Length: 50
Image 1 (cartoon, helix red, strand yellow):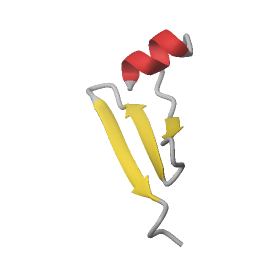
Image 2 (cartoon, rainbow, N blue to C red):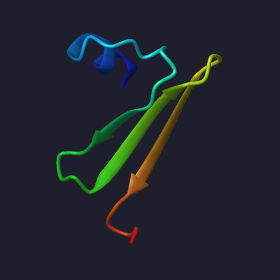
Image 3 (cartoon, helix red, strand yellow):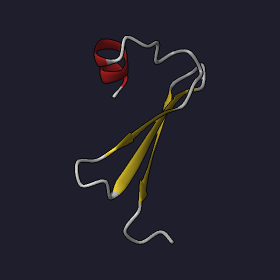
């Protein structure tokens, strides 16, 4: 996901910003964040979330 941010969007994945992605079916949201020591990745399933 960090490579996608860097190559496709020409953004810096190490900038400390949150990057959000949705799947092809748009039923999940993925978040990517660099905290200075490593990447945090979180996935939220929107089918079960209300």
